[in-house]
Length: 171
Ligand SMILES: CC(C)(COP(=O)(O)OP(=O)(O)OC[C@H]1O[C@@H](n2cnc3c(N)ncnc32)[C@H](O)[C@@H]1OP(=O)(O)O)[C@@H](O)C(=O)NCCC(=O)NCCS
Image 1: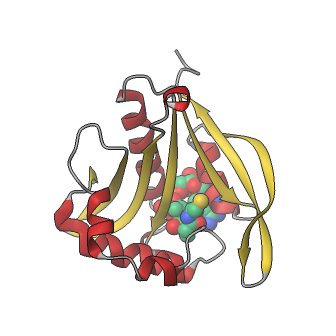
Image 2 (image 1 turned 90 degrees about the horizontal axis):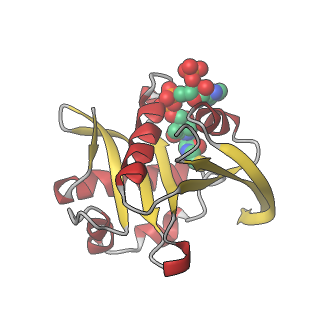
């Protein structure tokens, strides 16, 4: 079941994301070391139940266990307030291939649609991350550019594919 995460999930959320950064350094811009150093309050503020939160996190939850996550952030700047960004997408390895990723992305898109003034959702995916790219395409995202040298991972640069979904595309 997909739900918006609240502060009681903070420990599980932090643990899952640290696992994500450690196991998939190519897929995320943040490193496990820099995120592990942040206080629990940093993670908790992402889960604050504010209806107008700038960032919020959705989780796939079963029997109280957090199995996967996806984040959504809204741009607070007046001239970019129509844009939101999907970030921090991760499903625990043992639970992949069961549709949780798709459900999380669809929950993010639904939430973005419900926030007044939001017109589009964008994201980046590392070039060569074919599974994630296929997931995003299946959920209606299309690429609009490739950012060269986007992230340095262990001394090697990787490119990021930028994708977007126009929330009014099917209106
Ligand atoms: C990418 C990720 C979130 C997908 O989660 P998931 O729960 O396994 O995805 P789903 O089961 O919902 O898959 C939905 C669709 O995505 C595509 N897909 C997902 N994983 C895939 C893979 N490894 N290879 C090819 N296509 C894949 C398929 O089109 C799939 O649809 P199908 O099952 O009808 O073929 C997961 O593999 C993951 O956490 N990867 C590591 C972290 C990561 O890369 N995050 C993305 C950062 S941008």
